Image 1: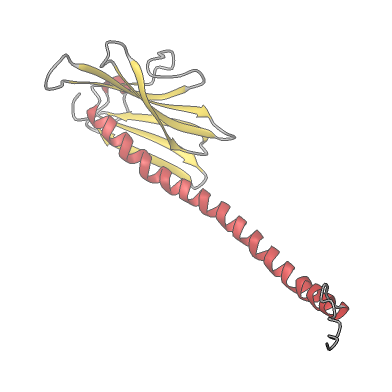
Image 2: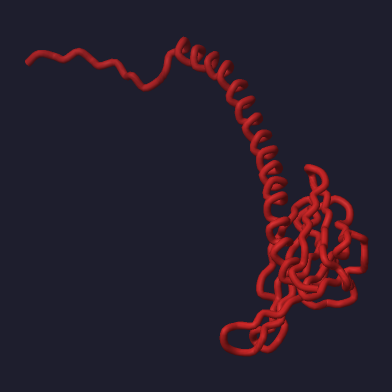
Length: 190
């Protein structure tokens, strides 16, 4: 039998391989770190921009539909109809729908501000008495990052500013991170 030569163990790296790897890592790490930081910063800016864009789409469409349906408009902050603890009423719109069968259903949309997760929100609270008791059915955040206090302006048919009980048209103005936003609509009935 012939003796086999002893095999050399390949269990590690040479010093040269380790030095080359460390040099490459030293060049790549700052580039990757910069790319990640830029990505995170861009993501935050994009989220803020999308939120402001959402505000500009959601508030006018929702507010217009509610004002057009409204039989009455009020800004009474003492009335707690369709509000929750911590809400500040901006405007409340009321109307009655008559279903194909059954009794008429009173409906309320209350636009309120409230403190959210580190920001002030403008929310729409929707209530109805379809079960015999006025109850909250939905709540939607319409504007994030509200700055200051939203205002409501009510006008008669000629465009003169009037109390909201006699309003033919209603406007709500809100300021967010992108600036002022106003939603206006005319009531179908007065």
